[in-house]
Length: 135
Ligand SMILES: [Zn+2]
Image (tube, rainbow, N blue to C red; front, side):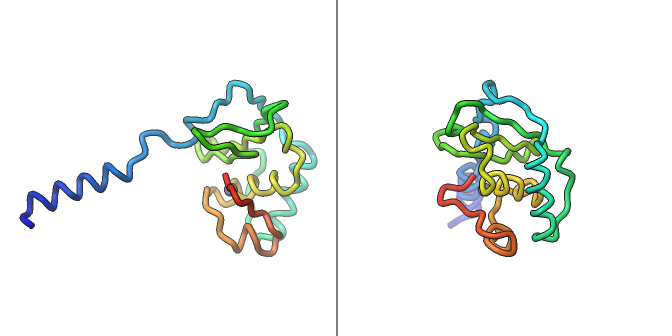
């Protein structure tokens, strides 16, 4: 393999890993309503801070609820809730906006400021916050 071929293959590999759109850009927020975190959301956030050892300002998180919907469409995937890194936003389908597990799941993303699901935080001292189809 000569040098030119290697450079070409490297370029193809980089392009192949590049997603033209971040997932949040595919979320339709036109039906979403921005809400202030309820006393319940604040209480769940405080519980997560206590069990995880993390700390954060819940008022730095923008909460959105999509009324009357049971799922949020993100590209071709459906979710009950979704944390968006850009703007530190939590979007909840209305049907699940009162689910302790779901709200805590999304709040944990916001506390970690990460879309990953490290087991130490999602299935550890704070209980089982895992879902089969996670968002
Ligand atoms: Zn998640």
